[in-house]
Image 1 (tube, one colour):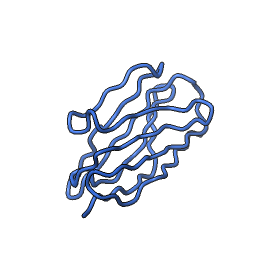
Image 2: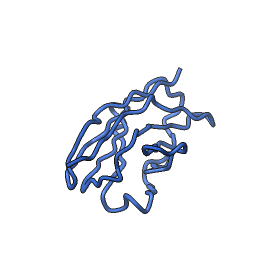
Image 3: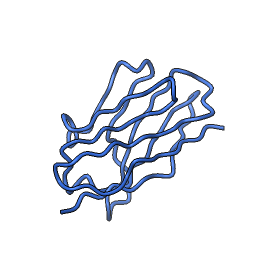
Image 4: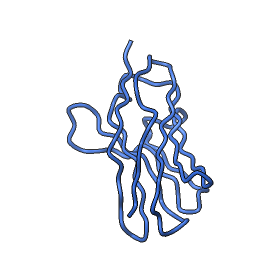
Length: 117
């Protein structure tokens, strides 16, 4: 069974940095689309933040995070990272790690990131 466990969230000041990690287990394929989404306070929908293609050589970012966030994957540890720099107040959200494995989507439990003075 595919499981995703996020870690590394917490609080940061504007302009600061955080790194989120997502430990993935139970994958049946080594080529997976992996992504981070977030749900900001007061909003019902989750928005895409960053996507890493199946081969690991393509990325796509939301306009709001381009140039500040980087998604990466460590195959040896089966971990996906979201490096977040130059954090802004509006980055405050619950962040979710997602993976598509054999055409099925899976999501982690979410982790809080708070950017405050």
